[in-house]
Image: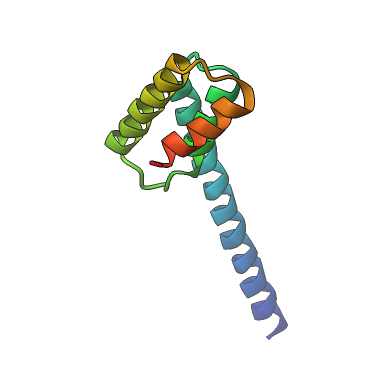
Length: 100
């Protein structure tokens, strides 16, 4: 009985560890993908992009990702046209990217 209990506990630990490793690997893959798509973005623009990309659902499609990139480009261009800087730019970008 005791050996069976030990075997069951060991199996549970192995399965739990495997799922944690899988989650870490998928998060690492997502980070690599988002990092590659971020391209030459710098500073707040990169931070906003990475946050958006990493928080997107794991089942996200390339089309949704491209749509977000286009939205980022449009919002960034609009902020530049308005000569926004610092906190004003952050506030504008946040509203623009959220669809507001």
